[in-house]
Amino acid sequence: MDLATDKSSKNPDEVPAEELSEGRVASDDELRDELYARPFAVERPAHLTLPFVFSSPHSGRLYPREFIAASQLDPLALRRSEDSFVEEIFGDVPGLGAPLIHARFPRAYLDANREPYELDPAMFDGPLPPHVNTRSIRVAGGLGTIARVVSDTAEIYRAPLSYAEAEQRIRGLYMPFHDALRQHLDDALRRFGCAVLIDCHSMPSVGGPGDDDTGADRPDIVLGDRYGTSCAREITMAAERTLSRLGYSVARNNPYAGGFNTEHYGQPQHGLHALQIEINRALYMNEEKLERAPGLQRLRRDMKSFATEMATLDLNGLGPRFRAGPV
Image 1 (cartoon, rainbow, N blue to C red):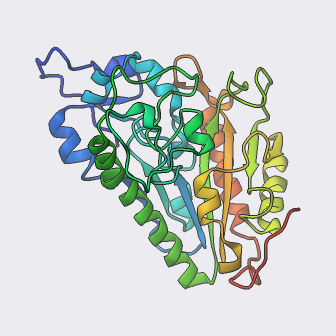
Image 2: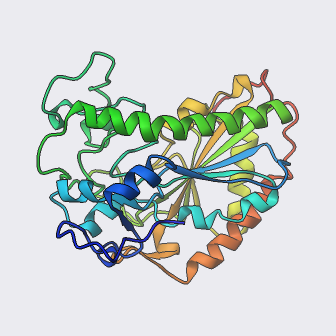
């Protein structure tokens, strides 16, 4: 559960929680004691009975106070990068026998669906170490591990950051999140002979100005398997078939084919499969106010049905010798 703002605080820099609506602002003590001590949450099943691991790297809503103070954007604008409430949509999967891991830190603060060191040198007040990837497409778009912009291309920061600040976020938030995700995938792989990451996201209902589908209405759900390379075709086809039967319009790999997590963890030749699922936000939330809508409960029920049906998929033969390929 997210932390509420300390209403007894008299600090004039404190941002009232209501300005973030469903988000929360952490004071300095809360940041130290809560966010960095517990940067993610894991909802564990009573018994691990499925080779699936569900992950939501972008649904965190705990905003450090000094981050908001350093931003030139209002709190609601900062929240537009969130995959709001996605961890709730998939909240029933632990009861089916699969873990759900979700970040508590917000995407605008640290993006766990990037390489650990994708950084834009223009954001920093000094040179970056040579191991930093400064030339990726994601960095060029302002959406590196430490984002320069929110999803609508609005610049986040008032002033350049120190590299030490980036290192603190990466070591304190990113690495623990990925250590936990890898551990859960390894546990499933050892127990079942294969493991399937379902990387859970949400998307704006209309393509934005920086997207390939600018101005276009989007389908209900987009499945990304890196064009058949991150996941066995049987898994992708079963996911598409199940979601279509539940009444959703489904596309594959367009406009999202899967990010770093899908590409990095999707190693079918080693028995590790990764499938990204993007859910249209208009199905379950008010996109302007970033508030839950009545459709969230139906979507949650349907994602439980989706996970239940995926659990019946015969994964024999999809272990380390399997070779992926386009469908």
